[in-house]
Image (cartoon, rainbow, N blue to C red; front, side):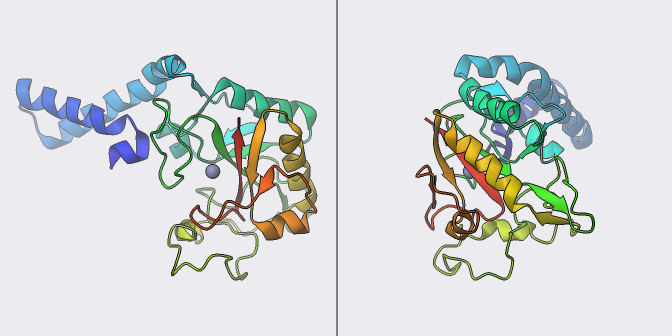
Length: 245
Ligand SMILES: [Zn+2]
């Protein structure tokens, strides 16, 4: 489970257990504290430089580029290739008024290690970004804010019948488990989200952007890079999936 969630957690758990069992026969809570300490040292100090050997970089957060929550960072789900980070930074440079919130990106090590439940986030070239929102009562830009506490599950049209029925495609609507965890004071900004998607689509390194087809239609997006992801992926009316070549 730790490997699935954090990539490095499983192996560190085994190492920690081995050390304590073999050399020091201490209690369970001491072993747990030791694990959290080792895990934190690896996550914040050792993994970032090591990841560069695998062609990945830890996303550099800034006032206009933030993770949706601390878990994204603490679970090592915030690694991309330098090229993908370049595409994101270029987008911010071209749109000085936009702030970006990222959800899951990729793990730091090895191509082909999937970041579940996103089967394709396995090579540093994919990232999920939040839509743009305004405050409902003032129509002011909610800079750097998204409704979902976990990012996912804040669907633009909750009542809309999903394109892919969950009985046939259980993964498609799996992020609805996060739907109760969201703030209610934000509304989807069509114009700012459109601007964000168009800028990303115009970048020559961008290969594909996934959103639900009804959003492509309502925002009048025409780029052939903007596509439907199919029914075997999670639904995309709460975030954008960006992937580069
Ligand atoms: Zn994605």
